Amino acid sequence: MFRKFPLAVYALIILVPLTIVVLTSIKTLQETFRNPLGLPENGLQFENYSRIFQEQTMSGYFINSAIVTLFSVTLTLLFAAMIAYGITRLNNWLGNVLFGLFTLGMMIPAQVNMVPLYALMLDFQLTNSLLGLIIVNIAVTIPIAVFILTGFMKTLPKELFEASTIDGAGEWRIFTRIAVPLSLPSLSATAIFLFVMHWNDLLYPLLFITDNAYKTLPLALLEFQGEYSTNYPMLFTGVVLASIPMVIAYLFLQRFFVAGITAGAVKG
Amino acid sequence: MKASKSLLLFFIPGLALYAVFFLYPTISAIFYSFTDWDGLSEAFQFVGTSNYERAFTGDTVFRKTIGNNLKFMLAVVVFQTVIALAFALILVKNTKTTVFLRALYFFPTILSSVSVAFIWSFIYDPSLGILNQLLGLAGLDFLQQNWLGNANIAIFSLAATQVWFHAGQMLIIFVAGLQAIPKELYEVAEIEGASKWQTFRKVTWPLLAPSATIVIAYTTIQSFKAFDLVFAMTGGGPNRSTEIIATYIFDVAFSNYQFGYASAISVIFMALIALITFIQFKALRSDRISY
Image 1 (cartoon, rainbow over the protein chains, first blue to last red):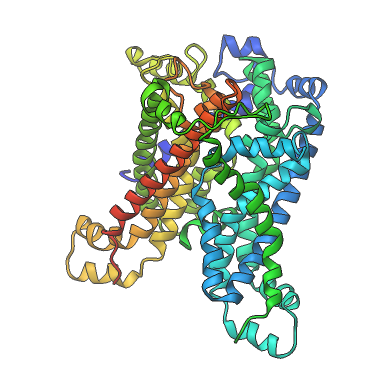
Image 2: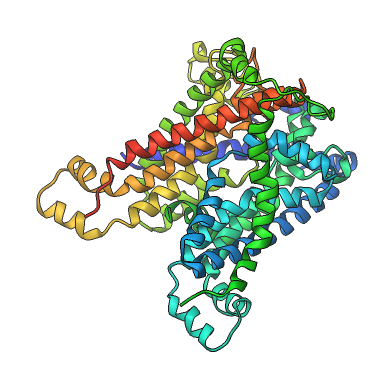
């Protein structure tokens, strides 16, 4: 009792808001005003969903989010793994300096450099461009990825790399054939961590994207607020749709999500 | 064994992007902070330290945002850490129930901040919101509030949202830290007849200190970055009572086009975070013991 009560209360604190979101998304605005917490009166009706697809270019936002997330995660992971490998193999002052340079980036909130970054992106004509978002995502999340992956690669036995060098394998070969396969647990954890960050990112689309054709889901969602105001059934329809990919991934890959979150924290 | 030169090639793509799109803007924030640049025109003037003077002496809004940020940070760090640690202690063993509950508590972390902002705007809604309705049902009408509209409490309503959003993540980190503590130490404590509190104080807490350091440092930085929630829920209002440094920088730069001044605030922001992180590491390190 002493333990179960707070556990149940906290479970409700998490579950009730989520349930309200799903229920409200299948209610009409009138129903919501009449009885904000009640069940939908006419059973399941998905008019809000068909309306949002009619009024918004939802599939376009989905595709933009998918493209940005896919490339950001893959490239961050690849570049960070290469750097982590380089630091591990250098194993000297230069490696330490580079490691320090990247970890420094973890301590600096993105809002600190958003103003000059915005100016830079204008100069490079990378605003209103998915490529621009991908580039910035990589630059901003590479520090945490390098930090996690280096922590892992340093625990791998050095002899493995050295033996391969003696056998005449080039660095790229050792990286792809030995370092990457052996680092899969930490790579998958980092991938999930990056997936959550990039899929949900609001700041950079907000800064760099004004053209509807390049908006990602979080930005589109934010702008529904301007359009639908306090029409919560419509807003929550957007919330449900934008969350579906992440929720499905979470249901199937839960263990990796947990590993991804702890990898960044516990290694330190 | 000497590593080959070709290793340096491994750094090039990542380091190039990081240098150009992260380090360079960070450093140029320092440069622009000494100018009056408006972000649009080609020309700008060096204005010495006048942006900093303005921030420290002339700008009452900036002073308010620092206060708001500290209030928000303290509320989130204290409540989030206590909640996460308390539940981690209960849920430390791996059973079907604990694994399920940990997964449930963690769930909000995977949502986008915009989604979380919408959910809680609805909960806090003065007339439609569940919070006021529940208080009404419980006969606690006097506690009913305009949660986001009352300038005295809006920042704490946002802090509660942030805790709901991220406490589960910190819980997971604590659980990992707790599970890493060798069981033998607890056996010894039991044989020695230590009370529950003594065991916590002498075994769990000192060995958990590294995790606690990470959770607190992470929470602190996260609470300074709560940009999205503030932006989507209150826009800094009412009457700037929820304006935090990050949203203020955005406002100064992109509503007022004072890039030079916004850069100066960014630099102060960076220094403030460095200072707070440093103090926390110092303070928590003293509690660290290894057996």
